[in-house]
Image 1 (cartoon, rainbow, N blue to C red):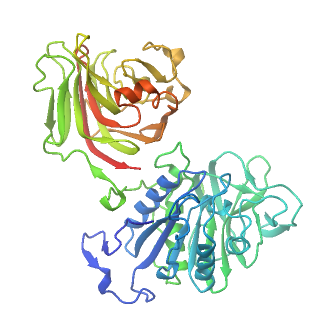
Image 2: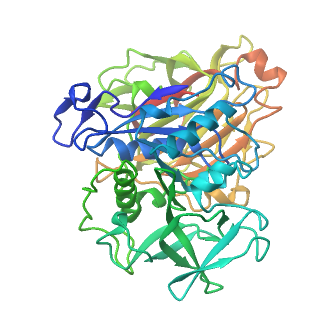
Image 3: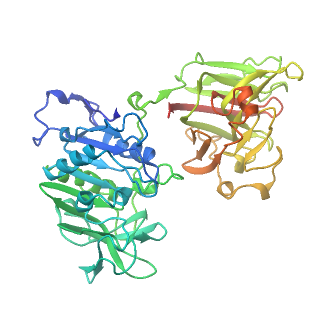
Length: 540
């Protein structure tokens, strides 16, 4: 499946000028944009967010156009016919990793991929993609070194600023220790790194010990030193394969518990990424070494500017102007006017100085099953009592109960937002009438004390906008099947598999747990002010 993502037919330059690249010269000329294909689709890393990070980087460049191909699973109907047109591109960024899952590409796609590189195409092997396809001989030759067992090729260690080869079968399997900030030390001279300082710092990186492979026709650009053993191992290298060029390195790590990690914010890696793409496309390397390039002792970070493109499935749930796409509902009959309003382009829920009543909800008019939701919320420390909290219902439904006092009830799971008890923010409570308890953490009731808090939330902090209207918090909810992940300010707070709960007969009877509406909450008895904006969602 091809997903057109970053300025495919129109490049948007930093000046804001749009240039129709269809009118440009042939793609192989120096002035034409570099045509890039991102290959993703399976990995033990977070390949979806990896692609999102790469798209954000490429969209900020002024020299490329990008497509994305998502490799299908072997049992997908499209598997047999999946055959990307590699020859349409100058460079392929490969992020697929079949380590531990055994997934493969169709044989025809493998042959086309091999021929693409052999005939002069560029290949960027992104982080764990060098873990892939150990039994594919041509791929082993293309990547040079990777994550391999001791009997699958030579390893290279750096000794005295030179290469030292460790024969096949000797030494250990490829492995790595904990990620850490590390000094990158240049080794062989190369146009990609020309002009770099001899040593520079990168954050939260993995150093592969005993990287192994065919180790043919490669040039090692840099290495790092293992803190405990004192041994030095390659961090990035390039390979000549036929007429093609390959870049391979361990930078760009994105795990499932990370959002916008510092590894991809590293100015050193970003600079290398751009310059490597130009080199892989056999273009002149024009991307400059920035003034804020990291030093020998200091990391330098540049946050990514994520793009919410309709071509990638994103849609805005709030237009910044009105609540026409939302319903205001209450679990009782009390007046709920003026509780939900628009303030300065944001949704504001305000129950301060209101007569106590039933919970009020701002409810989406669209239902969602598997989805990725991102938004910003603004909390206020001086407008929150200890009990005051809000929340975001997901896969929920507003049901009628004749026997209950409230007559109506919002059933389904909720992500808590709790300015008065910050460490509860991002945890998951199930308001379904037959459950009414915390599910992450897994508790028997609605009660929770400090000892019950999961480790992931014990260091949770919120940013408050009482004195600065520009202060907002970032929240993300990802629902895939029964698995729910919640990120708060780029940290994973909740990871909960609701199998046998969200999909049980009671939830199915009420129409919640696996699909339903989204809704923002205000309690009727605990006054609170809260704001939401930049609400984006895409179905998965």
